[in-house]
Length: 478
Image 1 (cartoon, rainbow, N blue to C red):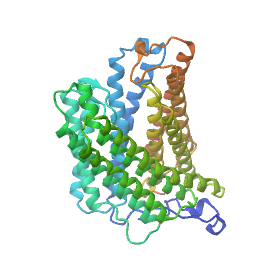
Image 2: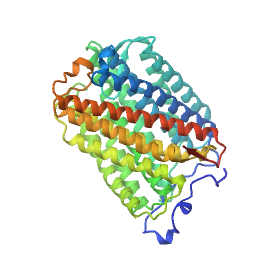
Image 3: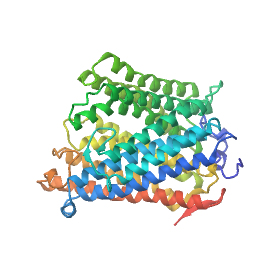
């Protein structure tokens, strides 16, 4: 693969001798990478983002004061919420994971890789159509909300089988850390650890499917069914985000003041945490409070202990990074900074959650959007490595900031309203907005959501422009 189009840290900063001591974390695709498969995973991810964007517009409108009077809420809101969450989190994250495992792996067992993509694509299409064709009762289960109807559940099942095939392929043909403890090995280990965590999550989903009593009401059934595996999935997303932080920092010319050995240890710590998942199934009844709490604390400790040191090292690297920053690296830095800010805000909000109100979606919006922004930055970084153009220009530079700012406004509005007791997972008259501060908080939420939608659509536009450009040419947004 030719190199001129790739972002070289030496072109975005002074010579490394002039930079404070640190380490580079840059992973170049192997020569045998199936770029067509990688591009196809990217295509599925973009389809999911476009679909989730459509549903997010409906969500914001259904929660915005006065405007929501024209919409058939709350059933409309809940159906849109199910589709939005599953497309923007589950499908988008799995698709980018497929992209990264493909880029960092090789061509072994390519038939299995393509089969995984075909199944995930088919499942996604069925789930996206189900709100309009199959319907079904919307169940607001944590992690994987569902429409309790035959069509949606069939699509989710096909997607799950495709995801299992993807994880199996990634464990067989995916990244290998190697014997030298350098930045490349650290990133490869992080991606491999994410694949192992994904395997644990799939095991948990299957385990729950066997154990959860079928005679429970739908809400309780799906909540218990997805609780264990959903928590394990958070380790997958966190590991992918940490890989993205290190990789993006190095791609901008920053040198991370954390040794690869210590990074390997942090990734290992997060991976150890996910193995609390099978222990929870063995130690406690699946419907018990102890079972639920063990998953929660494992996620907080295992993931949190890895995020904090790597996050601080990444921030320090950015602060110490020399200037100026080349145009091609500016979108990468914007995505990285926005990701760290949103993830940190989500984490802080989580500390102060009490009761069931809109502070809870504020917390997970911050965390999930932090992961999303990191993966957006990695997509920008990988586009030229896939033979496309390099995103640059004002649109590419401002897209992560606009998306992050909109999401931050959205979160602040939710926290504000949560302080007045506005409940989660409701819309329209069910929100019971009585006072001007309550209305103002949800209005800020709606405005931020609208700004974030624009930022998300701009990401698709920037990537689409890059796809239409020959390799090595920058994509300049107006």
